[in-house]
Amino acid sequence: QVALVESGGGLVQAGGSLRLSCAASGRTFSSYSMGWFRQAPGKEREFVAAISWKRMSTYYADSVKGRFTISRDNAKNTVYLQMNSLKPEDTAVYYCAASRISTTISQAGSYDYWGRGTQVTVSP
Image (cartoon, rainbow, N blue to C red; front, side, top):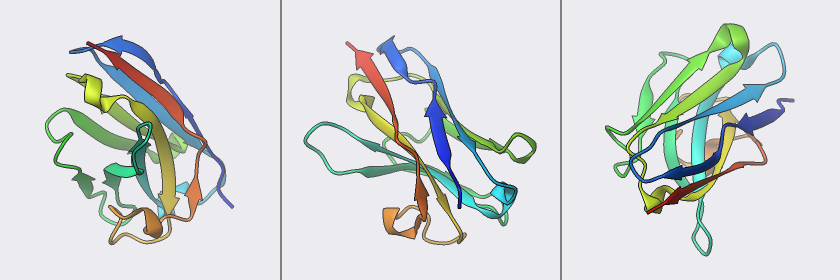
């Protein structure tokens, strides 16, 4: 079992930055691929970024490439999402997720555990 707790969300103006953190319980964090997804009101949950456990490969949605950076600190059991140049369309609840596999990690169905989410609101 893995418990995930997100933090770092909040209200920011367009063009600003936020860093989300996701703290994971358990001693096997390093063997999980980690991902960030988001869900805006009235929309489906969508992939944002992921980092594999095997080769530390990173993947990004086209909409955030060049603006967001995913990273992980296995010693701290934490994954981060640095979000720069934020836009109002980035407003959503951001969820952290853990997957036992290192492939297809842009798909929500590949994930075994989910956090409860943290709200990010970007004002114009």
